[in-house]
Image (cartoon, rainbow, N blue to C red; front, side):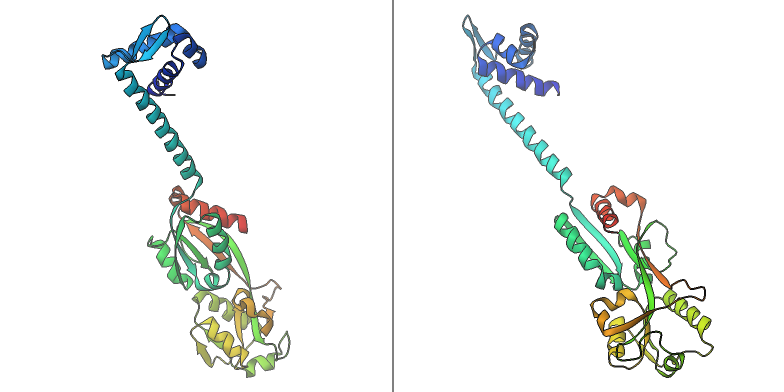
Length: 293
């Protein structure tokens, strides 16, 4: 406790008890020590703060002013300490997130729903797009946290938060998995705009299993459009399992395997800079994500 705060407590006790001995007992200090502190206060103000009589002490006019001042300052200090305590418990600030579109569409809403309930004072700015675009936003410090699918050359800390199976997707009305090779070759392959690394994986898998290239005759710009085309039996595609979302019952998903029998997988990682953990909103979000995986 600071000396000034101690003086406030000492002075208030003397004023309220009206007796040096009682005040000393209340404060658990010796009477000489209390008398000395009072003398120092009066010396500081160059005015008497108490009128001393054989029956005890009473406040002077200056003493009255100082008594109310001491009460007010202690009250303000307690209010500040309470505010500071609440501030330390309550996470505030703005969190700028860059998130892969697929993850943003199918997984992020549930995560943010829980996070915002736990930390309602954190403001969110969410930017979505293909993973390469989100990587650029992160590298240019336009977002503090990036959630990116597939391999990326990114400087920073990373955390694996999800692993997706990659599979051949057809309409449920078509033959169930595994789909015969001749059927695959006759139906159009619906290629949708996505990160280059995914099609690198798909093309590598195809070459391991087939000598003839796919009937690559339909190209669309989004996974949602791709699903609609598959739903209408316009062809087939290769999608990450997450991309089926709530529509999974409408499609047949056949997980793809490499020649050695291991599954084709695509990782989703969370990226952040170590120094950004100094911001409570960032640190809290990353801690929350870790608790969900």
